[in-house]
Image 1 (tube, rainbow, N blue to C red):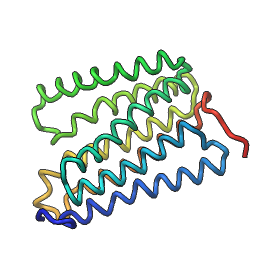
Image 2 (tube, one colour):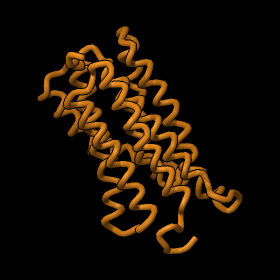
Image 3 (spheres, one colour):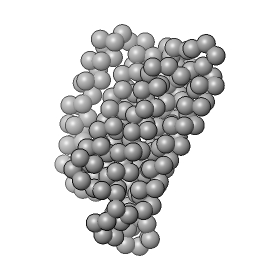
Image 4 (cartoon, rainbow, N blue to C red):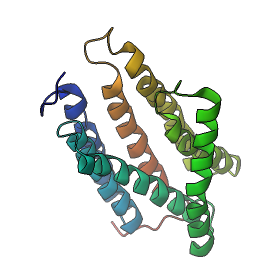
Length: 210
């Protein structure tokens, strides 16, 4: 691999998985009358994640790095706020406040993991707070009889596999032709698609007439 546009062709092209996931979920929600502002925003962010990651794996500049990580961060925060509002029936003040509190809490969690494990996770420790929030929210909703919680837990399971493959990419890169990072893209597209689909089926989610 070298510093050329197609130095990482598989990693670049598998970002199409995000666009495919967005298109499939869009079609499903539109058919079921569940496409509204919240799910629409998340679909836009999902599409932007795919574009940003493609740019990072091709031009690999500082602005491309921002285009890669910023939509992911915005998706996490938007999804958390919408889940607290719709799944937990909190008002926007509480949902927004807890979402903002998630930022420093996740940074502290990440720092603690890195102090404990060093670089053993290959830079994947930053995604553990989102995984933890997903498991907690999914378990809590399921315990309250909200079926969408089951899908959050399914997404969490896929996310565990995704993080594992991202972590293994560096040590296995020399032993495999393309590494395992490309599966991080494919599995994360499934995770994010599932999350949007589940959010649309939470009791507090608005619906549009078909």
